Image 1 (tube, rainbow, N blue to C red):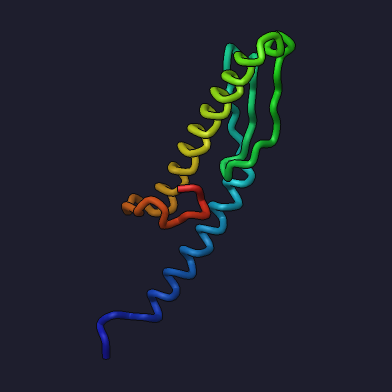
Image 2 (tube, one colour):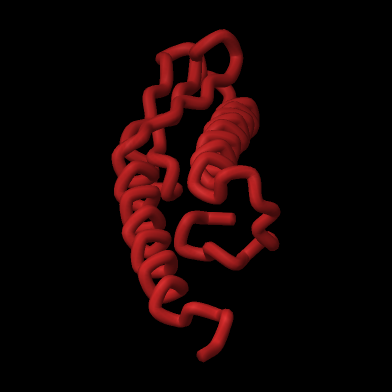
Length: 109
C-alpha cells in the first residue's frame, strides 16, 4: 500500500478548483475605481479587468492631450487596485503558499 494517498489528493484538488471558481466570480463582481486630476476623470472596472463606467467632467474636455493623459492615469490606477485586490484574494486562497505568477492565469496573475 502506498503512503501517498491519491484519493486524498483528488479531494484536495477538487476543493481547490471550487475555490478558484469562487475567486473568479468574486473578481468579476468586485469593482475598483481609478481617478485622475482630483476626480475630473473616473474609471470603474471589475477585478477581472472589464471597464464598467467612465466619467469625464466638462473641464477635462477642454484639452484633448490632457484628457488622454487623464484617462491613461485613471486606467492605470484602476488596474493597480484590481491587481492588488486579486493578489490579496490569491493569498487568501493559497493559504500563504507561494504560487508562481501565471499559474492561475484566469485570475489575472
